[in-house]
Image (cartoon, rainbow, N blue to C red; front, side, top):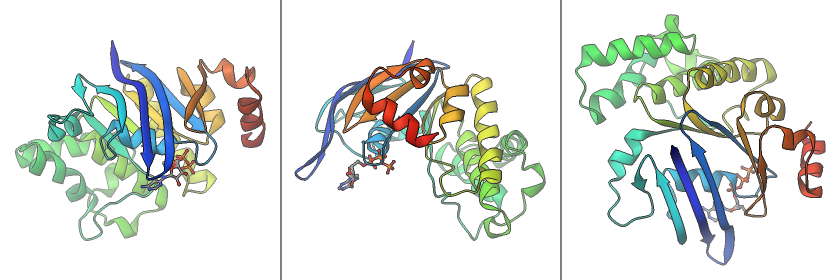
Length: 241
Ligand SMILES: Nc1ncnc2c1ncn2[C@@H]1O[C@H](COP(=O)(O)OP(=O)(O)OP(=O)(O)O)[C@@H](O)[C@H]1O
């Protein structure tokens, strides 16, 4: 069953066309890595999936929601989709626990006691059980990113989108965050990750989509990284590794 479908998606910013008819789909439980050079349109494609950008034409379906439709229920879409960015965007004046319970309590109207239980559960999942009462500034970048992932997980999304979540981190902290994402993948979460971590993508992705100049240039299993069919992917892989 497809959880995410993009069909001939086009998107321009002013005179600049960023997506020239992008199509791909992600099945339930699949991990998809979206790779490509800077400016190829990866983040824009991801943002369109969560309707942070509206597309010009084509179709996007996510968990049964017609994302580009005028009568989309944005709240319902956002309940099904979790998104984590390079910047953690935690509220600095709230503890880690308060940051995480906020969504379930205020958006899902969950009783506080239940939200706290879920928070303890997701904090354990990301290895931050002992940081519930810490403030974001007391955490390392990797810990803040794991808290941001926990915040998304607490909403119990059906699909998770990761937009270069380790780009701001040094290698050790990157490893911590990637381990959390890998565990999430192992648990069967459907996910799309925009990443420059080629070894990670090769190891955990079921499907790799390589974008080039706003188009899907190549896609397939991890083997496309070892045996690229096009010079563009060959160049990209040799620059990244
Ligand atoms: N809001 C915007 N307004 C104008 N142009 C934009 C906007 N967002 C993105 N772009 C342009 O769209 C193109 C694709 O950007 P996008 O961020 O999707 O690429 P990317 O592949 O994710 O790159 P990177 O790896 O550097 O994040 C770039 O040329 C960018 O300048």
